[in-house]
Image (tube, rainbow, N blue to C red; front, side):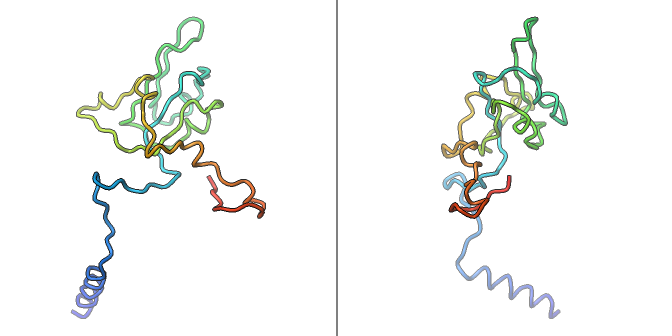
Amino acid sequence: MIGILKGMATTMKHALDGKTFTVEYPETAPEVSPRFRGVHKYSQERCIWCRQCENVCPNDTIQIVQDDQRNGEQYNLHVGQCIYCRLCEEVCPTDAIVLTQNFEFVGDTKDDLAYNKEELKNVPWYKDIDPLESREPDRGSWVGEGEGEVDYQ
């Protein structure tokens, strides 16, 4: 009985202090970590069709179709089955595929979550934040000379 009263007292203390822990989404956009892994963005101009992203993907989320001259014809990514491990982004030598902070994507069927290269190219940045720039830590702070937080990717 005493344990229940202590738990209720703690709950009431936090309920009456006036602080809120929830965000009124979608009216207020939530803050996400700079290292948040959201939907992918693909740049066909940067891609050299090396297929490393397809080979490293642990659950075959990425499918690349090439013609006889090894030019890319199709680049398909099924966002619904992606586990957002970021291996495709890490292995890409040209940063042709990056994970944005954008988490706002929906679909009525699982086929709606299969994106082609044009749909991946048009994925917007979340709050206009380029993840390549936001993930770069201040290199000087690693040796104790710069300012800012150290970001150990």
